[in-house]
Amino acid sequence: QQQVKQSPQSLIVQKGGISIINCAYENTAFDYFPWYQQFPGKGPALLIAIRPDVSEKKEGRFTISFNKSAKQFSLHIMDSQPGDSATYFCAASNTNAGKSTFGDGTTLTVKP
Amino acid sequence: DGGITQSPKYLFRKEGQNVTLSCEQNLNHDAMYWYRQDPGQGLRLIYYSQIVNDFQKGDIAEGYSVSREKKESFPLTVTSAQKNPTAFYLCASSWPGNTIYFGEGSWLTVV
Image 1: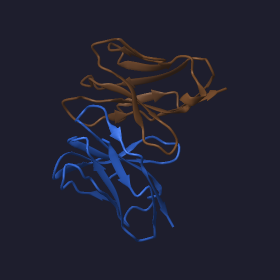
Image 2 (image 1 turned 30 degrees about the horizontal axis):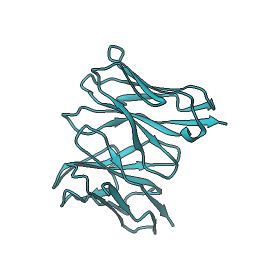
Image 3 (image 1 turned 180 degrees about the vertical axis):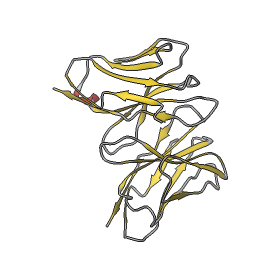
Image 4 (image 1 turned 60 degrees about the vertical axis):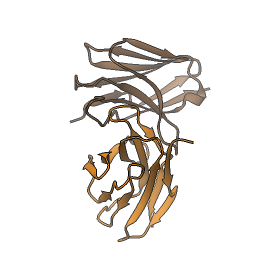
């Protein structure tokens, strides 16, 4: 049973556009929601994360929007750049219970 | 520098051979993980450990084995029972339930 569903699987955006990736979770015990960015041949790295006590978190061009009642969260990349081309994974975890559950990933291509 | 060190970066396995991937972390994290990633695919959990001398199977543990004798080390052995081991392997660590820090990965190819 997949506990975190991520969409879309792939996304193509023009330079300067907005990239939006969505995730939905099932387990209401989750209390930590990070996004990871992975470049080809490298390990994923934390991009931005949010906890359910806030509805939005912004760091530079990257914003997480969180909807606790809908059990959904999304990553918005403003003014997308070719250097943002990577695979993005959402994840969810319970900080009292251990391991994270990952979405299947979204491959983002930003065209110049 | 703090982080996760995986070795080797590239490894070739002959049919019927066991190989071991090394993973060391100096972040003082309790939890360590091994993930497998096939080209263009997501992260699949092989094994994880939340404390020394204890580990649990993940979603695709068959054909793999691990040990956790030290907090800093979590080696993964790919046994001959794993029939399709060619993949990118990622070691990671974290405080339980928090941000996961990944290594640079190891490429395993069957020859």
